[in-house]
Length: 356
Image 1 (cartoon, rainbow, N blue to C red):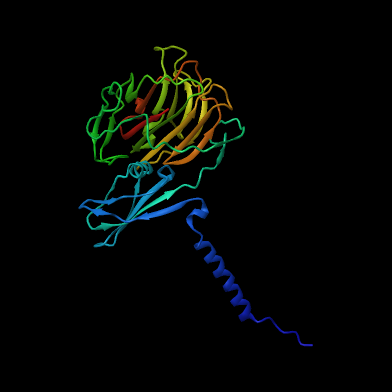
Image 2 (cartoon, rainbow, N blue to C red; image 1 turned 60 degrees about the vertical axis):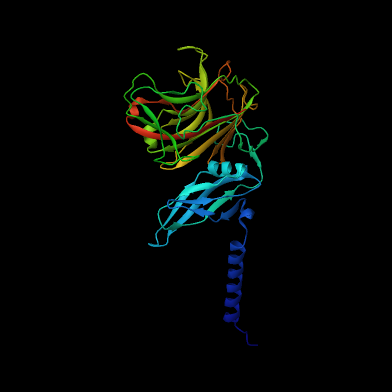
């Protein structure tokens, strides 16, 4: 009996069919099947230096990121311009137009990514010091805030007490780097020459946030050189009795040698500090949003600290987030504390916000 050799043509054709099927299965899966949905919007208007979009959605709080892929029709050059997620959420929520800067002859579409429906995120997922426990539902970043401010021209509008500006720091309103919202932001410039307190900060005051309260805080920054922000703070809630008082403490987004972190600590010492988000790299040369959701407690397992970067949940912890007996009475942001040994640097800040 003669044994026939397999038909290589048939076998090859079968392999090709399987391969094509796999490719189609991968490419035809909608974005939502991977946990996210992407929507594309055409410009509704064009000006000499901007494209105007009007994004729409029934869930503005679900926006996680957005960008415009620009192509110059004359030169053929391409570039991607990132658009702050908070700007897009704000435009959708209020039915407003969204302005994106462009060079002459550049055209493109706005692509907006939306997160999937809320899922359970474990407390203590490894990014914080969380003590385990049951899963905690992911929250939605507020689209309206009890306190907020904009720096389109008046740096003090919407704040309490205006800005604290210690020489040689300067704070001005500028449009040179764009903004998280609108067209202008606060520009903070320092040469590190103040050996006392380099404290360029705005304030929301008289908060009285005690154990059991839920609160959101947030802000938007554009950092030119992350290495120049070591051992400084970007925003914090605080309790302050007086200089040197042992009950002084704060909960802050601060910068260490290895990146930005969220921590609750005493003003004067790391002893007893509670790490709530491990250090993460600071985005450089672009606007980024940080929003922090808190359920305040001095007891691990009863507290909650969730940190969102550009609208995406990046850390969750159930470690204690109150390390002192007193309530958190004020919010500071901008550059509430700058370590003068860093030398000269520039930071842009916009859209301080608080909800409780």
